[in-house]
Image (cartoon, rainbow, N blue to C red; front, side, top):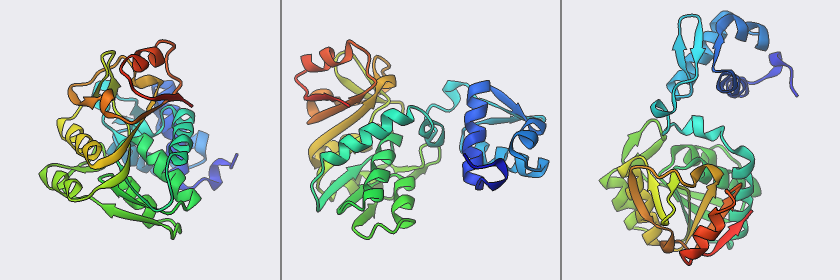
Length: 261
């Protein structure tokens, strides 16, 4: 592991976010000592993390916000179920064929899959409304990965574009695959998301792809959100990681093809 003084700012902030999530809070003086930085640098890191919706600053430090206030935050979700998302990303890559066009939604699981694609320089075209995926491709040297960015109304918490313009852009393309995830998967097979605009984007991607691949970790089961996207019956393949014991049986009852990874 790198010493605190050799960490890049982004690495240090990820570690600070993990520390605050595990302990509930952190004081500036504590971060100074733990990471070997000045008080000014520690405060600057907390400002950056607050802008991303990961922490809430307080006098002299920061606390971990309640779930209801940040459930749509991309950067907060990026740090959850990392091992499961990495396995899902590998399994998703194995489902792709060179040269395909692939819709990718704004989920962090979709981001992990895209990162694996970029790392392998897998030849394909990603069509996405997710700003982090666009940045990922732009900043990489993966010459065989192309990206088509979907514009529209920007949602800061999810770092994504939504709305009528984004939907029309997706409808104007077809794709071989869509790689996506959801906030919740209900017992009756309904796929849900907290935001109706995000749900509409995912629904449009599913409709425009020849094969829809749903990637879910154990936290997605039995936790339905407000807006219905589609039913699991509309999905070609469900890739599941760390799923609860009953989940595969419930999915099988819907007739969906399910694979545990």
